[in-house]
Image (cartoon, rainbow, N blue to C red; front, side):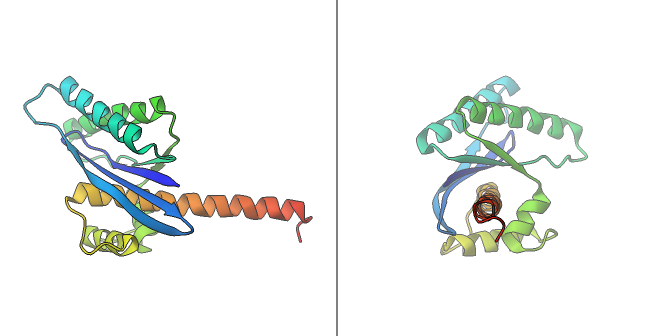
Length: 174
């Protein structure tokens, strides 16, 4: 399964592409999409949409994992991130890629095993899980990979639960 993880933002969108097969992750690509602060918001949103659309077209993921919003005290920032998130979700929808959303707590729990983990702990465990020689930078790209890892684990356990249920039905629950 190929997963595109997204850490949404309007100035910086982190992305991480990985594969998850036979309970093993493989890092494919990660990075950030950026928009210059001087551009009008509609131009920034278009650049985000085009960038995410290009990632979807270039990698053809089986799943699209995105972090649910954590609302900041700054309303302007929250509104702008919501707008960016909207065009990101639109790009995934137009590409017909299933979207899965995870809270920061779920991501930390999946990657570190502790929902209140610190950012540096998540970044280090992301490096370890992917077998990389160093922590992925910038932070937004590392966060996106952690979101993709979260989906790999969540998707794998859902698939396992489903196949176990189906096997149970075939054998009469034995």
